[in-house]
Amino acid sequence: MTTSEAELKALMLASLDGEAASYRLLLDRLSSRLRGYYKGKLARVGRGATEAEDLVQEVLLAIHLKRHTYDVREPFTPWVHTIARYKLIDYLRRTRSSASVPLDEGTAVMAQDDNADAESSHDIRKLLERLPEKVRCSIESVKLEGRSVAEAAVRCGISESGVKINIHRGLRVLATLIRAGEQK
Image (cartoon, rainbow, N blue to C red; front, side, top):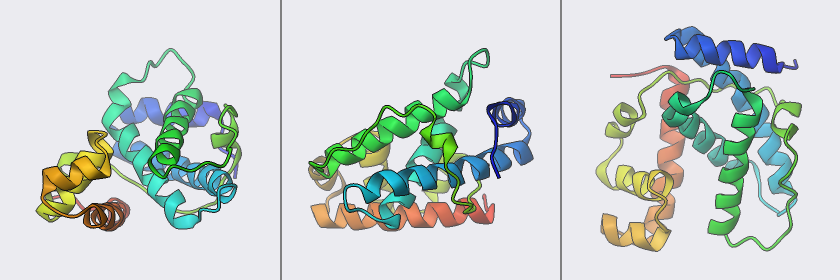
């Protein structure tokens, strides 16, 4: 199923007005497209579905945290593409990937759909509070504050590999909580 700019923008506008069901549907529609987009891009650098899923969750988190910055007078899908593109660039930098991945395809995020489910209507801080302290520290440091893994290791008092493992596991837990629609 292809979701149009008009439908996605309508869902975004409704979610900005506080309609939780529209917000969940928006994130569901976006996640399937993002997943397809990232799987295609990451396959070119020898990466797989796990990395693609991590990036999808990062973009959904960024959309959640930055949705108030969306200008309702502008098209919605270019805004999403910009977030997705920057998350991909950040990932490639973090992993020091030397392979070339074309990044200028403005409509590529919306062109692909891999029909997987993901939804969210949560306040990210409440979700993060549900994670163990070291896991939360790792995610906040690297994913939200933009610190390097080495900096996060020092800040959180764990090894660099511990930070990487915590981020991977923590993002999976967050994705599960979002999908389940849990919030306390």
